[in-house]
Amino acid sequence: MIKKILITTLITIFYSIHAFSAGGDGDGGSSKVKTNYEKAVSYIKSAKKYEKKGKIEKAKKKYLKAQKLLLTSNSKKPNKADTLNYLGFTTRKLGDYENGEKYYLQGLALNPNHIGINEYLGELYVVTNRIDLAKKRLEVLAKCNCEEYFELKEIIAGTKKSKY
Picture 1 (tube, rainbow, N blue to C red):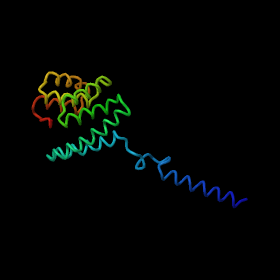
Picture 2: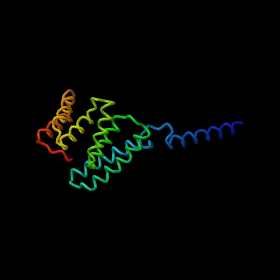
Picture 3: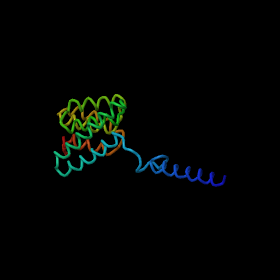
Picture 4: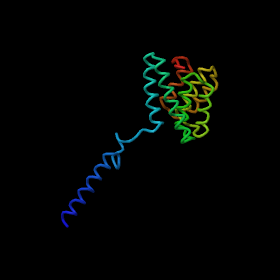
């Protein structure tokens, strides 16, 4: 009887340890599978680093990978302002300003004060020579007293260049 209880206990402990190490009730750290959105953000960060080094073609490849993941993420979970922000961003970085603007505007319809969308849409307006519209995005950002406000202000003033 004791032998049977001992064996049952050991089996339970074994399966508990196995379930925990396989991602059961872990701390959510390294065993967590990244979402398409999270993978896309990683590609975007990598692309920005390539851009700073002047490696534009490598950056564009990363932006394209990010865009594909974001499109999948958006189709599975639509109406997320953060996803639409990065969809607009990657689309703009790939040279498609018209569709980039559409994504930004969809995101603003959900969250009119979204800091990232307002900054990036303002940059798109500068690149497409619509400074009055860029200034309207700047007005929205003025309330946040954030880095994005100062970045866009410099780009509008021409003291800082937008990459594209």
